[in-house]
Length: 80
Image (cartoon, rainbow, N blue to C red; front, side):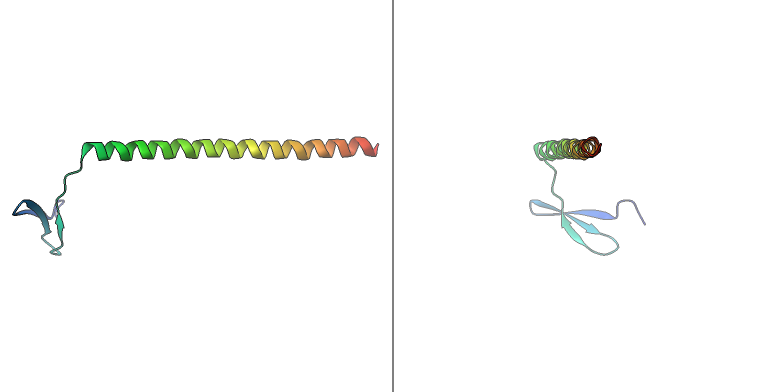
């Protein structure tokens, strides 16, 4: 199969792409640069939020472990 099996056909003011093999038709819509920039910023924000959530979860687990350890130490001290 070819790497680009779509042929461009111009109908009025629209450019259509037609697949040579399956005859699928789709409209050729150019991607706007500002839209791509918005998507890039959104993905970067999601990655940063995920990293912050992972750090927060690690801190919470550390605090819980410290409370449990402190409780065990206090229990051992009061039993003596």
